[in-house]
Length: 169
Image (tube, rainbow, N blue to C red; front, side):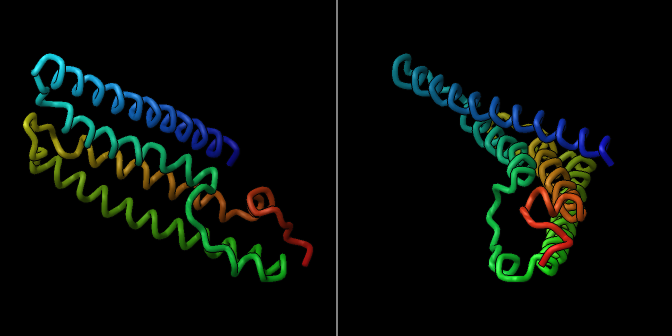
């Protein structure tokens, strides 16, 4: 289990770094577009499409880090008002539901990736690219996030992530 967590953490950190690089490239591309359009009267044909693809990639590359850090939106009133022992089990149930939901979304996304690949579907853009190149990031982000939810379902992670212990309450 420790090896699984190490690999998951490494992939998550690498994805977060790539997301940050993607955001930097988005800003750089927009600045480049503004300069070429307004100072040289030579707008680009590719920046708008690139920014769209890079934003999708960046969001879904950052998604696992947000999930790992529990930075996502969470309504915790039920867990907060329950006795600690029951709250721990409720946390497990909620984490398993989160895992199942994200795993199902991953499955659906993967099926769409495979459809796009087998049918050679391209983006509707000035410079078309295979659509699975973009939607693959969605599948990756959902898959890694689902694994983090599964990780948080384990009793050993309830203590460190929620601040309560199983034996008290």
